[in-house]
Length: 239
Image (tube, rainbow, N blue to C red; front, side, top):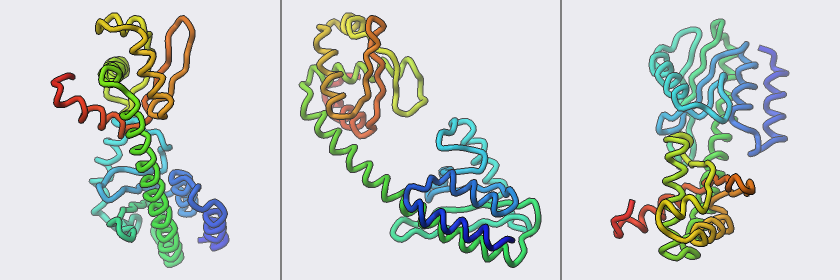
C-alpha cells in the first residue's frame, strides 16, 4: 500500500467536503485497493454506490447487484471484508469490498481510514437529503395552496398521463403534454390545464418547457407534491 495515495484521498476529501460525490469516492477507494470491487448500502440495505455504477442506475441492474452482494456479504476471507459504517443517530450503512489480492496489514489500516471518511460522506448525504426533503415539503405545500380543487384534479390527470407514457420508471414521471388534447380527454377547458401547469411550475414542483406546436415537456421534480395530491384527492373518490 502506497501511503501517499491514502494521503491524497484524505486531501481530496478535505478540499471537496460535502460536495464529493459518493460514486467518485468509491472509485477513488477502489483505486487505492488495486481495483477492488466495492458496494455501499444504507441502513435499509439499498444499494447507494458500486464501483461499476454512477448516480443513475437501472432498477434491474441494481437488483442484480444486490443479489450478488447477498451471496458475498457473509463470506469474509483473505480477499474480502464486510464492514458496518456507523452514522450518529442514523443507524449504520455497510461497506463490502473484494480485492484481487489478499489483504495485508497496510490494507487493513487504509481500509479503516477509508471507512471513517465514508461514514462522514454518508452523514453528509443524509443531511443533504433532510434539507432537500424539507424544501420539497415547503414547495409542495405552496403548490397545494395555490391550486383550486379543479386545477388540482387536473394536475393529477397530468401526472397520470405522464405515468402512462413513461411507465413505473423513473419514479418521478416526465413526458410531453398537449394541453388542448388533455383538456378534451377529460372534458374541461384548456385554460384549466394551462393554469395548473403554470402554478405547479411557479411552485417548483414541476419543470416545464414549451416546444411550441408540439406541446409542453413536463417533468415532475417533487415527490412530496405527488403524495400530498394523492392524499387530498382520496376522499373525493377520484383516481
